[in-house]
Image (cartoon, rainbow, N blue to C red; front, side):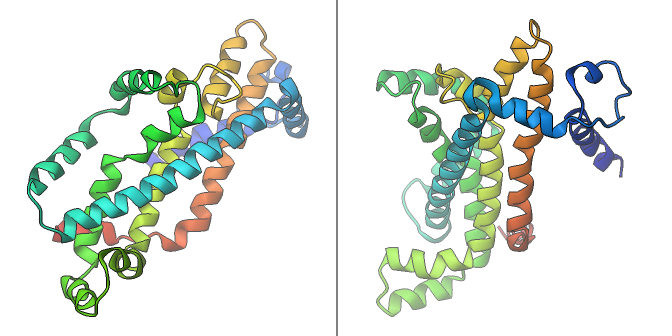
Amino acid sequence: MLGAVYCLVPVAWVLVAATKSGADLFSTFTFAPGTHLFANIADLSAYRGGLFWRWMLNTVLYAGVGAALSTLVSAMAGFGLAKYEFLGKSTFFNLILAGVLVPGVILAIPQYLLVARVGMADTYWSVLLPSIISPYGIYLARIYATASVPDELVEAARADGASEARLFVLVALPIMRSGLVTVFLFQFVGIWNNFMLPYIMLGSDRLFPVTVGLNGLLNQGATQPALYTLVITGALLSILPLVALFLLLQRFWQVDLAAGAVKA
């Protein structure tokens, strides 16, 4: 209960604050609602010709494409680690576990140097490419494939003449679907909320995701206090796609990953 309150109070504050004008934001009771929500949304939409919505579209691109590609790579790698034997398998998996423990912020600078070396800094690719490989996603996919895809079914498909690619697409993927939805959601939320990587990679504000864009507005608020209202309204709008995604995909959400962890 206390944990729920701790998580929901900031969201409630953002919702209430987004309804206030710039003057009311600092002069009224914190949780007293205002009447300026739609006016604030209109002002935010008009800011620099609708730049905020460009940031939102960029974020959808980074999170949607990045999470989809990351889920596919995680599924292939996880299935391979679970169902194939090859030299160095244990070492490779241990390296993946080590990658799970490394904070992403530590890798941001090396990734920028690599991307800059090939001339892709300050492009969409500079944010998309580092998001494709997720050690945690591979780890989860491996656990789920081990627990949910029976070895007997794999052998039966091979006996029927299925190629390895066909086996993966037609046999493994449907069985792993609910687990891969979990991987997709984790990766989507991670990319959506990511700040450091795009902050380092991008210089043009036309390419910014919403996190970096709102941070720029927040910094300008020190000299233009009226922008604080735009930042809060933008923060509220940026939450809505995540809520909608969880509501849309919650029917696929299962606790099988926990069961898989025990079996693995």
